[in-house]
Length: 154
Image (cartoon, rainbow, N blue to C red):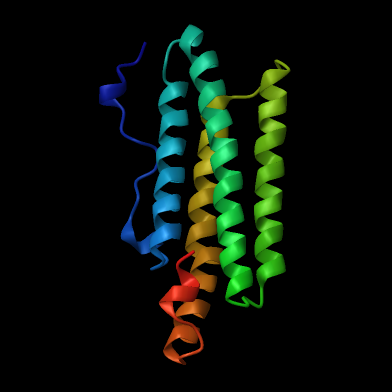
């Protein structure tokens, strides 16, 4: 077994990913934390991998759905013009995660470590690009006086 203390996290939160919306940023940090938990589960012994990975994946699926729902409510509330594209991105990711979970549960060849890396890349890429687009939109609307903090803080 690899000593997990010797293995750094696969994802490190950086403020460059911050949207400036406290609720969303705290949820993104939780996604990073869950991704790191999945990664560390992959480094465990085979006997512990299955139980820990499955349990953490279940928590990840639930949290991703919760977070995407909260983000979508916010985007609708602020009238984000690219809402449908953003929602499509979310729906695609949820389907990928659910498909991976299904395949893993059916005993199909899923390399958890590769899945976690894919998850990391998607989460960080999505935040860095798509979430930054809506956070810029919200900031511009606030500057114009068209949105208030009350409308943004879900």
